[in-house]
Length: 546
Ligand code: AMP
Image 1 (cartoon, rainbow, N blue to C red):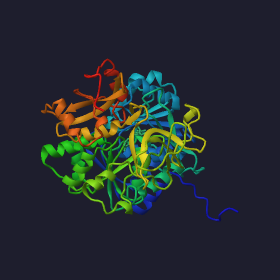
Image 2 (image 1 turned 90 degrees about the vertical axis):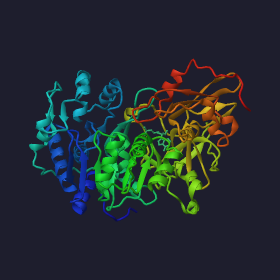
Image 3 (image 1 turned 180 degrees about the horizontal axis):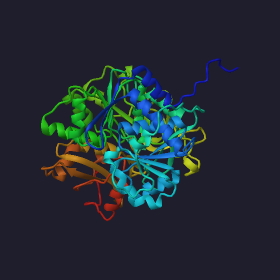
């Protein structure tokens, strides 16, 4: 017997309808690509997104067609997402930080038919356009006054493109499992693979992150997703902020400390989210200028491990609570968040940091396990390392066009490629990507833990740890550091900073100093490039402390 409730498919565009109806006057504020701060409302965003759907339909786009976006977080990008999904087409966010060849590969692989691009990326696209065979039209996200001379075929300014539509468009209705969005993995090996989010997975995930135990979103919030819409759906905030009627602030192309601070301050933002690199720049700016963060209550940090020193700085110096979260493109993307369960509510100071430093626990809709290489589940004792696997309505079951073959185990779990421990209260701690973990004398050493400790040293700006070959132990850790500007730390001083904080055999065998550590398009340390850079490196002593 079926339930007798109404069939109301969970469709993304219902979110903007709801925001317009219940919170129509709430603002969407953006730093425009052209320069000035732009202000609009959910009522306007909804009306203009219907015009986007009309313009796309006029161009022959319909159900299932892919529409590429190469764009920063702005109100126009937001309107485009809702217009595209309301037509039943699929937004395909392209990460502009990828190499041009990778951009060409994924646009061709996704068979995007229209490309919406910010002014910033017109020059890149002009170079690539000859190779982008499936693109029929380029829409430049600007107005006629800022429209550049361009060789892009069939190019039009966004404002002109939607000006010919009256907004009288009825959203399409279809099954909630219909594809809504696409994002390619930024895999370091092989070609990027396409992840396809459904309307249902986007809506469920946005409801999930709203919960008090996860990101705790409300209509009284002013939210700034610094995390870009092209990085794993801006962690849902382009959906979950309107769903909750929060004021939304979009930072555009500028993510340096001063620009981010300016918006945090002038728009009185109380919740924001980004990768640790962005917060390093902000904290540096605050230190330099002596400014504070009086309006900010909470910051979500994820995408790479958040160093303990960063959590401590936000909380102790600036009174901003940190929510450390973990996720990935193959999820919607949030898979865990480090809220405090009752079992840990009594903790303070350093003990509380121990919990906040973990990647947190799985919210409802995410099931998690750790296994050995044979797939046998491992205990949740907070000590045993294993392969982290997940399943749920916001986890990929396959990649676009079946690339990569079968990706689930016999129980429907997806192997995240991360290595983690899980404690008896469900708190998961990532120790490494499985391909980055160091195996020394048959035991695992967590590079993330060493890196996080290293950046707590007052003279270190950034740190990475890689395994280098060792005749006796197979591999030993090499610590690679970027010193803070104006400081000149010594290797033995850095290593003595580790003493007493880690097991003796985890101690890095040497420290190498570099000016810069290479990063991927989503801000992660490029371990493969570092391993290549240090492939001829030899450790100073053949033997190590036991
Ligand atoms: P992406 O698909 O680019 O978002 O990358 C996902 C990967 O980033 C995960 O599988 C992890 O390896 C890493 N990651 C994301 N969040 C965290 C976190 N909070 N701590 C450690 N690693 C993280």
